[in-house]
Length: 378
Image 1: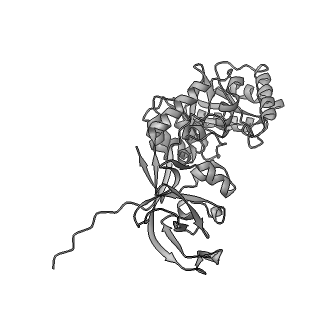
Image 2: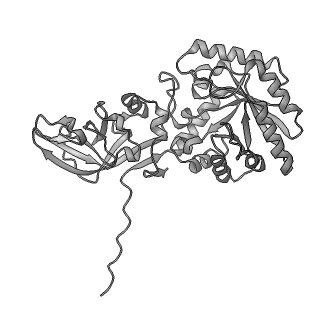
Image 3: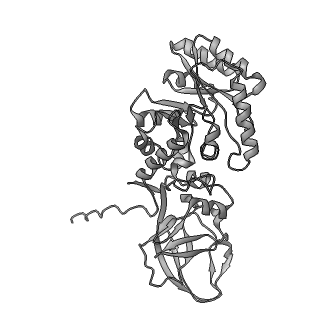
């Protein structure tokens, strides 16, 4: 008896469409804000904010010679995607003791806050005959890492005096450039005054994240690097500014079932939604297992189907959600697209809108999209 012919592999139910042309346009826009004397460090940590590290790094080659990551393994992936050892990769987080020798051996750049970290990098570099490239971090208000300003000159001196280390950069970070202009301006003032007290030499100076670049770029023209993250992906952390940015990701799924339900029908776990009338509802192939937040349950969240906003009903489950399609002018059918983030017709749902309804931030929405979601690049 002949074996049955294999059916073609169907597409995944949920996909993130990534517009690489928009990514490059956003990089150009960030460069215009930064100015011609300031280079860009593209932040590609957390799988390039959920957009796919390798594809993003490849698309940005030629736009920047710097990439920022959080971990050694992200640095390895970035270098492989670059295909060029002359591209600078900075590990923004403190290194674990086990990572330091590998960072130096692969000629990545490390971030240091303490003299003891400098000593560890220098010892590793001496063992393998390399030079450790270090960025000295000063804490001007973030509180997450960095050297106190009163001890910063000593940290810089420790790096300069270690024969196996090189001071490649000096930096700080804004904790609230999207919320507190007065505090941020104070940070910039403190940082600039601190630079006047040390021998900067040829070290790169950087402190602007996306909010800092968009909101305070004119105040930071003394810097030689800027570190945009969210803005590269088309979202402004200052909603009223940088409206020229183009969203890079659209998140879509499929309608997998359409039903008519009667009054009194409960929807999803906990029966938090009970139908008060006859309704047409669509089940969609997406849930918190794909990164569609469970906190959107009962929040007033909507999706786009047939160019209309369709309200989410009941709780988000791991693999499915249910939406009300009663008001859609035509029959909704299984297999058609539903837009979770992005544009359909004249309407748009942004990552910022979902974040606001879920009580979180756009960064978490983007980085929370799981690997079960197919990335499609164009």
